[in-house]
Length: 221
Image (cartoon, rainbow, N blue to C red; front, side, top):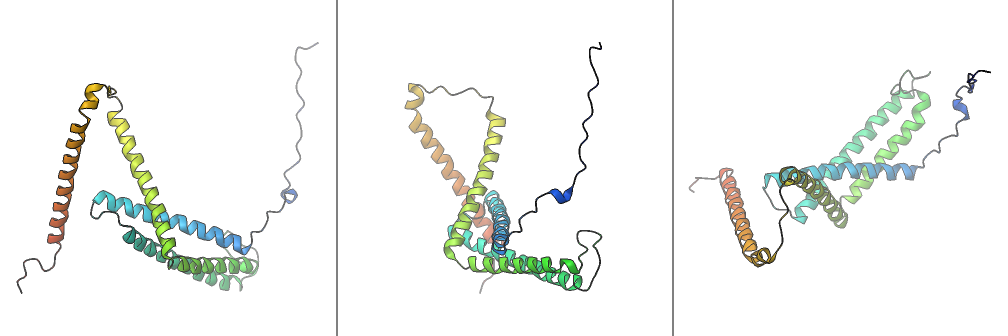
């Protein structure tokens, strides 16, 4: 009697795509909500990146009013983008309505795609309208800018922590004893003095840049 025997190969049925359950068709409101969500995410990322660049340059301190104004600008750009996509989709729909047959690739639209293209056009137009409404809401702009600020700080602080871990991670831990506690006030005083010097240097540099960019510098009326 052999110690082993060959296992019989199981035969699987060929894949039948028609046996798959039909994917539920999202409603117009669901498509609109998803479109606004995607646009908001892109807008926050753009505003976050702008905040990070400004923070690295050190040109202006963070101000909620200025951040809300920047958020309004970003939303305006998103409105323009959604309107443009809606217009392009409308043109594609008009062209597809005149073409019969089967498409050869995903962007080769035919008459059968006209209904879906019309739905997509309406969704993008509605997204643009919704973003336009929200960009005129001061409370929404404040919350939008604040969330972008939090995301910007999370990214910057993460980079700082990573660098500190890389450059200072091998340093020995500081022993907190009575001497360390007794010298705490002196250390805080020195730290505040360093911060004051840094702020004064930043203000002097900002003033120098402002004077250099003054178009009336040296003009005597």
